[in-house]
Amino acid sequence: MKPVETPRTLAALRGAVQGLTGNPFGKLTLLILLLMLVATGGFFFFEHYPKGTVHDAFGALWWAVVTLTTVGYGDVVPNTTGGKIMGLVVMVCGIGLVSTLTGNLASMLVEHKAKKRKGLLKVNLTNHVIVIGWNDFGTELVNYLRDKGVLRAREGGQSDLVLVNDLTSDQRETLALQLGLEERMHFVWGNVTQESVLLKAQPDRARVIYLLSQHRGREAKDADQDTLYCALTLREMAPKVPIYGEVALPENRKHLLRAGVNEILVHGQLTSVVLGLMGVNPSIWSLLQEMLGMRGGNNMDIRPLTEEEKRLTWGDLFPRFRADGLLPLGLAQADRQLSLEDVLDQGSALDQFILELFQSSGQETRLGNAGPRVLANPPDSEPLSGFDAVLYLRQGEKR
Image (cartoon, rainbow, N blue to C red; front, side, top):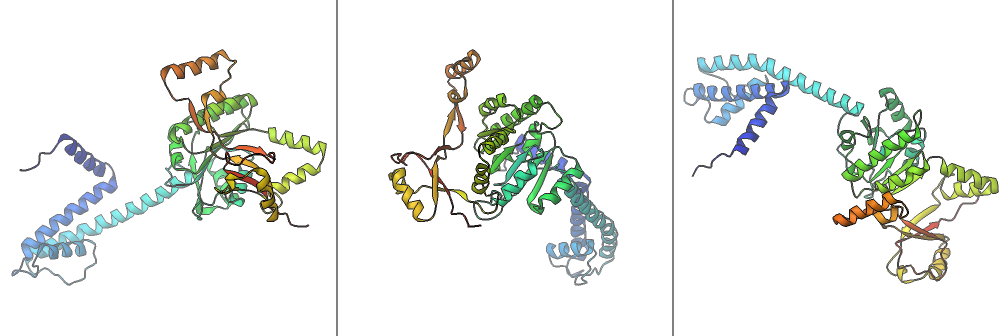
């Protein structure tokens, strides 16, 4: 029984045809296919053996393609008047159609490259690093990510970098030269609060996302509001991807935590703390530089605890590291789930009302992964069973 064509099938076929005829490239492709079909049928009709040398339809198709593309091998030639007339028509049409198609294809490739350079296309990447927004410290962030191996994929290859911002074309060109990542760096241009712009960066397939505060030349509260909108959209798009960000005002930190950002820094707060420590003793800053690898190398590192080590205590683990010339600093629990109760202020009537609404509606109050919990310099009796990794310092070089 002949299958019945459903309305959905007809609609899909109609949509495919409209898609081809809706642009010049599609129209040219359809014209060439139609000409090729007519040429094949006509040549087979006029030149079918014994009138000509064509024995089957494939031979006629071969002649049509060779003639249409003006290659002209000469292995199949028309013997009849009708075949020769068909050849004249195909050759004349082929010169115009094929050259026009080639020109349109080249134009499309140039246009695609221009759109990519302007950041107007969706990136086709996986396991990439996304930096959203830009400020004066963005270049330092990217350089640090590159130097410390964050832009190296877990499989041992290289992770691409995607920058999402509204910088001008000249600023992007200058930035590309400064960072020197060449083909590994991609731009997405537009307002970072718009979902359509963020979607082009493929956040659900990213390795990690960084949110930079865009407070230069703007009110700090407006910049934080944009960061919050961006965080809410990203967390909906990519619920499992870690997001790290910064805010301009300390009071807005809790709002980004509620939006699902894993870790948040207050812009300038860390600088104030370090300056205060330098006032106590300048050597503290030198120690921090050494630990963070800012003087070369990467002295501070982290490695997972083995199953055998998790059965030990901190006092048992310490001498093992020291025997290898390493200084253990603390323990880390890499995967900690954050709930709504953790971030809401129990003393606030509004926060308490929000929590009651979630509980009464039966909705989940888990907000996802809140980042690692670190216990620095634990007591010797601390069991390692509740932790995943150990932070330690490599042995420094003598200077």
